[in-house]
Length: 99
Image 1 (tube, rainbow, N blue to C red):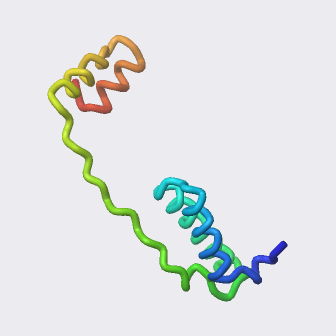
Image 2 (tube, rainbow, N blue to C red):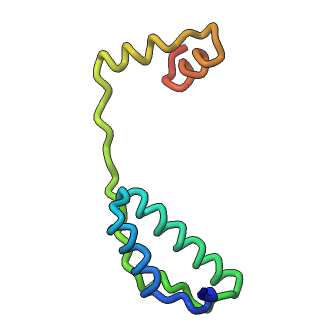
C-alpha cells in the first residue's frame, strides 16, 4: 500500500489508462480524473503533499455539447405534464416556465 506522499504522476496516468482499458465512458473517466485532482490538491492544501502529482498529468477536457432544440412534439409532451393541481405537476410547470 502506498502512502500519499509516494503517489506519482505515473500512478495517476496508469490508473487513468486502466479506466480506458476497462471501456468506461469518457465522462466517467473525466469524473475519476477530476476526483483524483481535487483530492490531491486538497492534500497539498492540508500540507500532506508538497506538490500535486496531477500537475504533470495532461487531462483532456470534455467538449461542451450543445443540446438539440426540442421538437414541437417534445414541447407538447412537456406541456401535458403541467398539471398545476398536483405537486409534481406544479413543479413541472415551474421548471419549464409555464404559468
